[in-house]
Image (cartoon, rainbow, N blue to C red; front, side, top):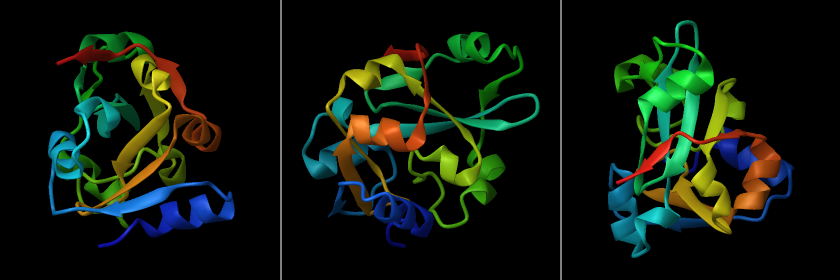
Length: 156
């Protein structure tokens, strides 16, 4: 699979500046970082959270993990938890499972960005496949997605 169709169309329609990179097939954000020879803090990962009545996207640096207690507080949902791949794979039909880009707005899913990520000038993220990534300015991503910025990450 190549770059997610919805993502490419959205970026091109909005005249976003981005660079696509191809790498060996990998499955975790830390493996993406190693494959591209960049620090884990420069790679963005997407974690899907299942709340009582919906799914939301948590976006953070690869060298951080989701603090589920903080997510529950932010979402005001004591039942919020990490979703399983089996639960969310059908939400991203044009993406390889687990390689969805941080553009939940394209899939009618709310996006929450960890506050620490906003300090990065550029971000790199999986583009819907396990072999391609996109690099773009964080400010452009923010303008295209309009995520809610909250503090939910914990440095590994």
